[in-house]
Length: 267
Length: 250
Image (cartoon, rainbow over all chains, first blue to last red; front, side, top):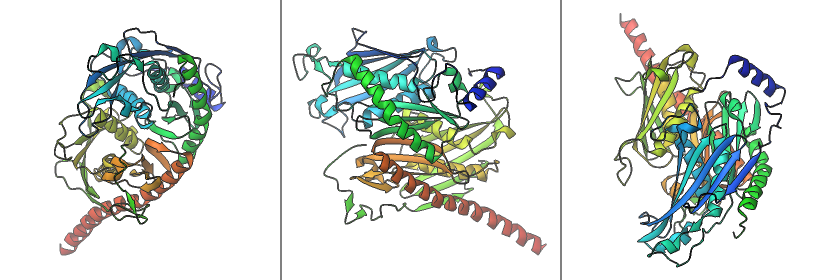
């Protein structure tokens, strides 16, 4: 099902954007209110609920002991999946993940994986035989735009909240649970382009008229670890540089927020 | 990006396959190679072998996927089971679903879709032999196939990746460089409007390295653009010449 927007709303939005304004009066590079609650879900190894304005996303982690991939016998395994359930939007249907869910999962996964957020070499129990498998699941409850950043913040918070459940597994490396070894803090900043205006954290209506989207994931050293352009529009090279420059301050604030919420700084 | 300290990727200022840092692998494109498809292109890029075919514009099925005001560009990127050393399980996986989506989006930008409401332009990309950079191969070949199908377009899309190996920014990562390098930045570039219609990055780049890599990729895309145009010229100029000859004989 396609998202439909009335002509009058569309025209109004375009006019606002042209005047450099937004529906809710925010600045162009300002997030909606960010609320992060970590550790709400008991059975999960780690969890976080992120509310980005009205967008509501849960991220949970589970761990299991399994076999490593043959080409990386001494590192743990990390997998990310996203579900866009029908509860979150009239546009979503039940069934296996479609291309939107797949893109979401892969873009945020790339930030975590390529950003070396988790030290997977420490998740090896017995080389070539047993390693920790870390499952990250993104569950979208309410879709009001910018799932990428909500999920990205949620993953980071959930990983910081994760305790390796060693006590539950006989074959594990330790007897006591211990915090997941975290090496870097990576968060994304997602920009949307409407006509020639670029804005951060688009809400649903803005997303509906967006031409293009650019997600930039940075670590605490301001290094770029993942990027992705989405939607059918284009960016010119200069504006990608501008987005990267802006992302430095934006991500640094988000990182502080995530770390503060979880209250863990042992990295 | 993997890492393996034992593998040396740069030796005496050259890359393991002997290329300079800003040198592309050899690229060959042939337009119009399939009979049934409305348009097609075969591309060899280093050790990559990729076929692209276009069907349409034709009626969109399922009908609920129709757009009332324009055509939908629907790309399907697929890797043959035998295209990689360990057999790839046939059928779409998460990676190919994502790449298909990105190629569709990148191509739709240059096609005049408003000319064909309610229809679909199907683009099929089959990777026959994979050796790093297959999405760039697919996008580059697909835009030639679209042109070969006679689809009205504002421009071709040229695609190329750059990345980082052993701290050095290099163009067009080869197989080992992709596996053991530190960053990969594939782009799709529209030369006439100087715009990016595909942009992905993974690994680790500083702001300066990003700019160095981008500069390299954009230059390379301009080179690739010439190869694409040459492929089309080669097919259509020979057809024109043949027509001319026929006329003269008559």
